[in-house]
Length: 527
Image (cartoon, rainbow, N blue to C red; front, side, top):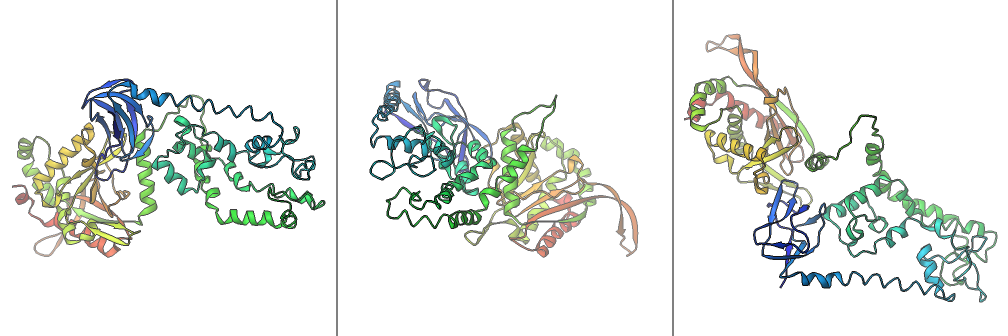
């Protein structure tokens, strides 16, 4: 009895996964809970164990392919016998060439041969019009003349459609479908280079970046052929239909090209879309000594997410200056004891996170998500705090601290530290790096002055904490006089989605965080 293995749900927000590599191949024995396949999502890479013991009889999704959750990816059986029947049908396609003997008959059987080679257009005579047989109907089997006719007719669409003799061409990944929809690409015109003729993402990108795909739309170019036919209205019946309707198309040829162009004008996107990819790909040149390497998968994923975020959310940036002197005094007083108790240093980040939790309670719209298509807003009852974690310059992941709004300063510090370490070590699960409702990014330790980060969708805002340094500042004394003193000053930047709220909310939200940092009794918070 066989068992079908499907793409698992690797996280509550994960909808698809990419096969990185198969630990077992067809014919290999596998034990239950033994690693079967390594899968990557837009969040993390995961080794997936086999759900049962047996023999791998089929691998349905090749390495490098992306499929939706629930898609069948492999079959595990009790023996390899189950695979044999699957392989026997494979030779079946080879008998199909049997139709090859069909061409010899010169009668009507020649027509199908011409149709395969020339997209169904009848053989053309020397004048460019259909060659006539003895009965006055278009001849099905002339001499070498038909060969030139097919090439101008539609060279691209047919080869692409004929190429997919394999059985996997119809299997399309979500990425391929989305890319084709975004650029209005007819997948019938795309040649598949994947396993069994399957269309891959690279195939679609190559098709989009090549200007020639626009030509298939001009497939009606046979229409201009009637132009010469104007001199001889009789042969004008370019359409393959009966001779009676043939006279009608004769006057139409002149307007026909215009209507085709008009139709193309209505769909300018396919022609315009290729421009950006072409610019990025074609303009890059390499010289001697330069090295070309494949872009890491994580970097490609980050790029896609950032572009999608910029195209989706109405980004606005607002910042405030904060006097961290009270925070610094509490840090200095407690840092030795804190490190002895917790095993790590007390930084500014937990203080900022704690002050932000209070501000989110005061301005819950900042802790929401939008569904513009449905016309709804989701107001999250809990704050799942996303913390952007740098992976030693190789990428950035957002680790999630669940229910951060109910945590003390010390607990926040502990959980932020734990999630950061797990993320850098690659020990996080998909659920631990998804589901945030508000995000904080902390470029301050790297020396930033002011930062305007990109929103982490579906959040509607992200807070940036920049470098805190000693600066001269005007300080009001208890007696009402002012003086200049050296204070620990830093800036908080908020990138927010103008679709969700307005500038007044953004400024008031930041001011609430600043007031908390400058006035709270942090010694008490640390006890």
